[in-house]
Image (cartoon, rainbow, N blue to C red; front, side, top):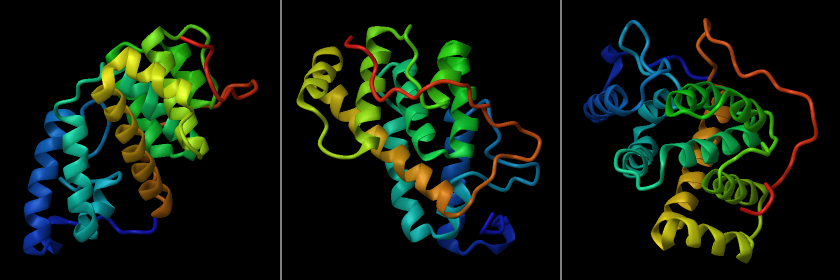
Length: 205
């Protein structure tokens, strides 16, 4: 970990305001994993966002836009986020969103395969499109037209846009976590990798 955890006694006025908003949002929307430690200190990506509030504040606003009133189904969101976390090998992101995905009802075998960089063969049509879009975007280059059309057909134009922005956000989350070497909480375990060849895309939905 490259940044010490920022305690409430160290806050400047801007950080204090941002902390209150972040903590309220975490307690409301980000449950099932540790994001606030026993001393009330924010961990995960929130610590570097809070420390560098000039950057973290706008990022948090985007997090709220994409997380507080999403139109995409929860399972679709978690498939895309797990694909992104797996691509970046972002331990804290996978730790957090494995928990969220489990609570949303994504099966253990799907979670394990996606976290290992694979594409499960038993995804629903919506989940498969989310996997395709996220896999294509994190691989670089223009999103293939056939995949974009499929996303618009399944989620609508605004839903497809939301999916693209969601993947972009979690690329930023992953880079934040990796850049500052943010660890998984000591008492937690990361998702074990499984054997097999990674797949870039699912079969057509």
